[in-house]
Structure formats: structure tokens, C-alpha cells
Length: 249
Image 1: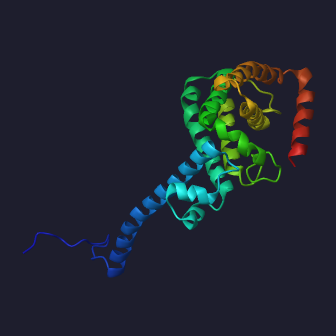
Image 2: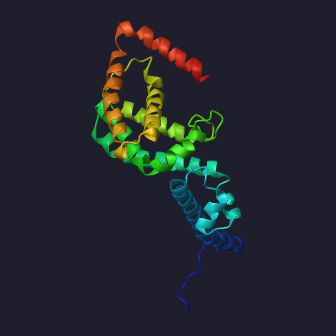
Image 3: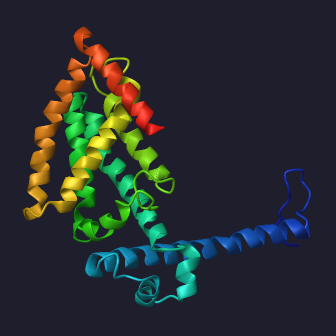
């Protein structure tokens, strides 16, 4: 007589044939999902490499599929267009930025130091993409482009980026005018976009001028944030924020 006991359900009953079939299907689906994710990552990595080597405009979905060793239809199954590949690049870059910034944010409470660390971390993450950044920036700069940082398609990466600058503020000792505080993370993100714009066009070795820009701009931003609490400047702060809110809508 066998010592093995048939599997049972929580109620003590043997599983039905349908339940066993469902479990088998779930088990079989796991390797399929894993292979699908591997293929997706392969296409993305190949695309980013070709963007760096050939430029964004010169790289086609067909070329990406050929280089990745997959069918063109397969490439389009995972990414509907080159724009979708760039959106995934945005999301990945933002995730890497968050990870790179975690350690300095955990160790520092000074607002200027936190902001400086996050801005430098962003440039660190973007560094390998400098060669092709200028080529797709022309497309991203178009107001109607899905690659625009202000587009609906970019909303996830934009929200994550603003959330990071919110963390810069919330974890600091900075004393901020209550009128300014809710919108300051978005203003810091806009300043970061300005840094990226300069970085895109920076041809200095290792983009050292961009680093100098960050180191020079952060004390100014820190000073402006501190001055925002002065009673004499509060009307100006309120007018500025009202203008920004008007332009946003």
C-alpha cells in the first residue's frame, strides 16, 4: 500500500479535474511570460543600442527587429512604434534615477545637498545616452509629439519625476512658503528639464559644464526657496504661482 497521499483542497476533498487543469495552465504560463519579458527586454536593449549607434531618426523598427533576431511583427507586438520604445526608455531612466538617488536622500536632510545629489544622479543615469539624445530631442521638442515630456504619453514618467523632487523637499529641513510648497516639486522638475536641455547640447568632455551648471544653480535655488518665506516677497510668490497655474490650464 502506497504511503503517498493524494492532494486535497482546503475542504479536504481531492481537487477536481478542472482545478488540476487550471493549476497546470498557470504553471505552463509562467515560462511563457518569462520568455515574453526576455524578448521584450531584448527588443528594448537592441533599440537603445541602435539609437546610440545610428541615431533615433535613422533607426527603423525593421532594423531593430532584424538586429534583435525577431520577426518584425513580434517587435510591433511588444512596442507599437519607436515612440513607445522611447516611452519605455523614459520609464526605465526614471526608475534608475530613483534608485541612484535613494542613498543620498537617505543620508542627507539639507535641501541644497539633496537637490544637488538628485540632479547629478539624473545626469549620471542619462550619461550613456548622450550620443543619441540630441537626435530624438528634435522630435521630443515638438509640442504635439508623444515624446514631449509634457505629453499625455509621458505622464507616468513625469509623475514619477515630480514625485522624486517632492521627496527632495519633504525629507529636507527647508522652510518653504506655504503658498509655494505644493507646487515647488513641479518647479524643481522644470528646472531639471532645463538642466537636461543644457546637457543635450553640452559638448564639453564628459559634459562637465552641465555639472558646473548644477553646482552653480543649486545654491541660487536654495536661496530663492528660503527667501520665499519673507513677508515682503510673499505677494510676488503668490502672483508667480497664480501665473503658473493659469498657464498650466
